[in-house]
Length: 326
Image 1: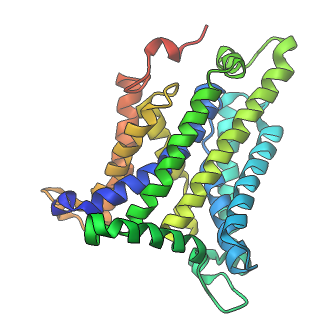
Image 2: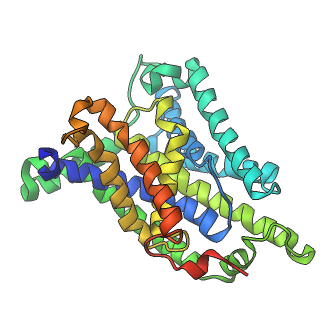
Image 3: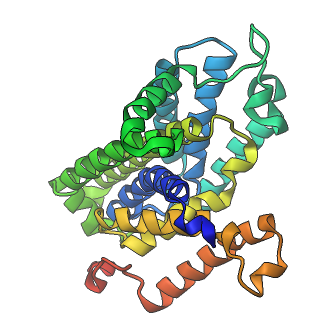
């Protein structure tokens, strides 16, 4: 329990919360605006993160161009997913999106010569041997840490520097999303998101609008993947399991599907829940090892989702009348 009073723990929580806040914001646009139930959102994070690692390590690209390419590739795959499966009804699209994420993860897992396979990005071959991909952004993070050192002393860590990069991006994307959701484009989507049988006169337009929400959400997922790759500096296929998408859904449900600003508090709560489980040492949890306690996050997150759906499906900040559109 002493970890909870350590500044380093809360710094990690905030850094993680910022990344997952961006990730969940993509789901909020897709579901809260477009009514698209995407259960494969983690695939966009994986594509973006691995694109950076492969292009920088194997092909010696600049980190910045690799990050840009990763986000563009996530948007392209979001468009491809939408063009091929978005006409399916909600439940079938959700299944197709899970299949997309699993195909992505298994491709990463089984392409050793490109992605490093089971050993992760550490095993990606490089012309100069084996190396990392964060040398360029690390210079910026070090510069931020040096600026913070006179203020916070030894607490000026890489994680703290990440906070000063991730959170401005989160606030900027929330502002963009908020403005976007006040447009007539968003109003049309909200008016039709619960209706799979839209009028024929609106059918093509609604399909195009929903495809646009899927692409925008995929871009946000790709941006989250860039920050994930930067935060951990080492990627592995198990970082992108299906459960990661449901972490984003927990944040979304907690905040309220139609409430963008609620994502901030919901993301911090999730970051605390995700980071604290290994430090819960009271009985009977003390009978478990630290890694076993860490896996409690899956149980706790599932429990939170179930309780929210039963007791408060509109989330902590949403309105019940917004859950049903007539």
